[in-house]
Image 1: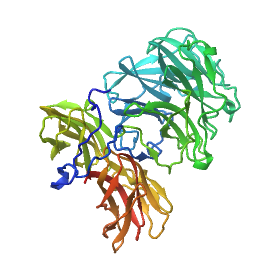
Image 2: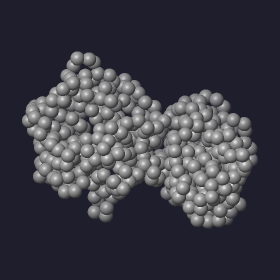
Image 3: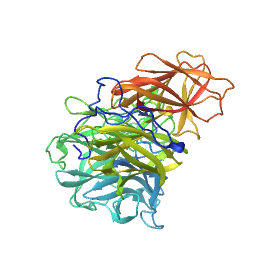
Image 4: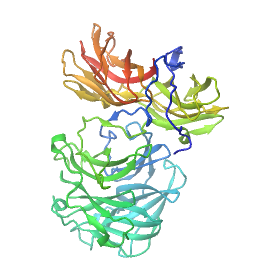
Length: 585
C-alpha cells in the first residue's frame, strides 16, 4: 500500500455548511448526527463517467502512459511532428499539448511521421516513431530520448532503431520482460508491399537492437486479410498480467471499417524469441460495432487506472463506415479479465455511452504534488471556463483538535478547509470551494503539521455531458460549460432523464447535491433529483440567461460507494452543466 494512504476508511466526515466566502472561499463541516454511517472500505475517489472520444481532434495511433499522477499521449499528429499531451485524467480535451520534436528537412526521416510510441524504460522517457523521406518504401523506425524527467520538456533525436536487415518498419515499441529488452514492430519480409508481419528482436539497450529479427505472425487469417492486399499485422501493443505476456496487434486494412485488434499470447516464463511460444487467437478481440456506430477500432495501447487496480485499452476508431483514415480519434474502455487470466473487451461502445471512469480518476495524491514552503501544489487541473468548484480534501488528523488548512488557487488566497480530528489510521474528508480559471489550474493546500497531514484532493464534480442521456434527453457541446458540453432535459417527457452513474461517496448519509442548470425561458421550471431509485426531491430553476448555469440544491441520501443520481421530470426545457456532491448532513 502506498505510504500516503490510510490503513482503513473513515468514520469521520465533515458536514453542514457553516460559512461560505465570496469567490469560492471555504466551507466548515461538522460531524453528522446520523448514527453508524456505512463506510466505503474501497473508496477510490468520486468516480463518475466519461464518454468517448478522448479528445476533440483526430488522434490516430494513440499511445498512452500513466505515470506520477498524469496521463501522457502521443499520436500521429498530421504525420508532420511529434506531439505529447498531458492530462490528470483520460479526458484529453483540456490537456496541455506540446510539439516536442520537429524533424529537420531533407533527411530520410523528414516526412510521414507515424505512430509515435511513448515509453518509460529504465528510468528514462523514449518515443519510438516511423518516418520516411516522402516515399513510403523508405519507412524506418527512429527514437527520441527525453532530456529531463518531464515528457513535456525537450527531446533529443537518437537515430534509427534497426535490425541487420534494415527492411521497411513501422509501429515499433520495446517489450521489457524478465529484465531483458526486446523490440517489436511491423515490417515487410522483403522490399515489396505485399504484407506487414509482426517481428521481434533482442535489444542491448532502449536504443539498440542486438540480434536478428524473428517472425512472430503473418496476416494469414481471413479477418486479418480483409480489405487487402496488402495484408496487415501492425500497431503492436504489450499487456502483461500475472506472469503472462499478451502481444496485441491490428489486422485488416487500416483504411477499412474491418480494421480490428487481435492477440498473441506468450506462456509464462517462455522465451519470447521462439515463435512457437506465442499462441495466436483465431478471432479478433475488438472489431467494428455497426449498431454503436464504431468502425475500424485498432492501433491500441494499454494503460492503467490511476490507482493501478484496472487495465485500460486506448484505441482509435471512426464514426463512419466510409471514413477510412479520416476522423480517427482515441477511445478507451476497461480490459476485462476472465477466471483463467485471459483479457477480453466488451463491444466498442457508442459515443453516447457513459462509461465508468477509471478507478481513482480525479484523485490528486500528495505524492504527485509539488511540496514547497509547507504547501502541496497540485498542477494541471483543467477547467473550460472560469468558475468555482467543490473541493474534497483527504487527510489524517491525530492531533486531537480541528486544524485549518490554508488554500490557494493559482497563487491567490482561497480561504481554508477545517479538518476535524480522526482516529488513528483513519482518513477524514473535508469539503471546501475553490475558484478556477479557464485553462490549467494550480491548487495549493497546507500540507500538514503536528499529528496531521493532507493526503489527496479531488473535485467531486460530474459533467452532465458525460452522464447517460435517456429518453428525449441529449448531450451536446457548449463553449460556456465547465467541461466540453451540456445535457438538455426536455419538458413533459416522462422517459427523459439524465443519469449520473458511478457517483461515489466515502460515507453513507444525506448529501447536498448541487445541479448547475440554465433555464432560458421566462418562467420557473421544476425538475426532480433522485438517487438509487429512492424518493425524489423536487426543485425549481429560476428563469435566467441561456448558458448561464445557476446552482440548485437538494439534500439526497447517498450510499457509501457507488450511486445513481437521476435528473428528470422537467416542467420546462432545461440545460445542465454539471452536478456536485458536497457536505454530508
